[in-house]
Image 1 (cartoon, rainbow, N blue to C red):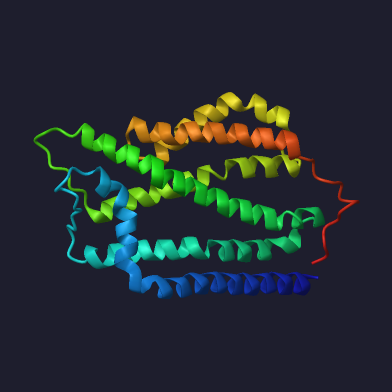
Image 2 (cartoon, rainbow, N blue to C red):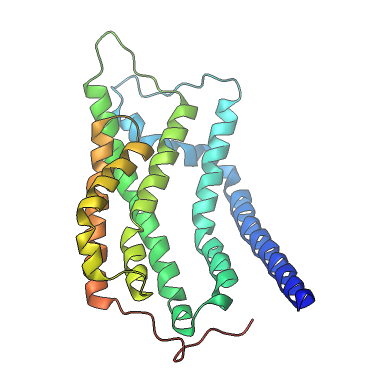
Length: 252
């Protein structure tokens, strides 16, 4: 019995390693394809802050000697991860799927597709709305005696954290719907939790955004609205987990 359990554990480790290698290889392949366009990708990435800067001052600074090379490299690697994200998520799902109920497996395609779309929607909201509003606000409140010339490495770190925060925030409706469909929480319970969710949204916004009220509001308010959207979708489409006698877990 112990030998059987050990063999099963080792087989899971081997499969996990294979899935991780495939996911990493997909990111590496996309990175190799995009690497000749690193400068163009960085210019696109830097457009929100460059458009906010005053005319004639639309240049960023590279304080460290290696930043002009490594920052575009990191931006391109981040873009490669985004492009390969659907395949990476598929590898994650393929690893956990054998331990799920049959009706949960049928959620694979819509969950992966909607998760990717909502993550990209969150990033698009951040890129086209939040960054432009945030940096234009920063320039407007800038004292006359101060020259605003952000460092490209700090800009990358700031934008990356915002992208991740807003991308994950837009996953809230999917997470809420899945929790209800799997029978882990009811719609009535979610409605009772609304005040705590509002407080939690502002706490999360304070943690994952820069220390200014504007960017925190731009994350906290969508979080609350996305939670309400998730509750609405759960009320319309949420179903409880089926009895194990009807679906059954597959044998390992």
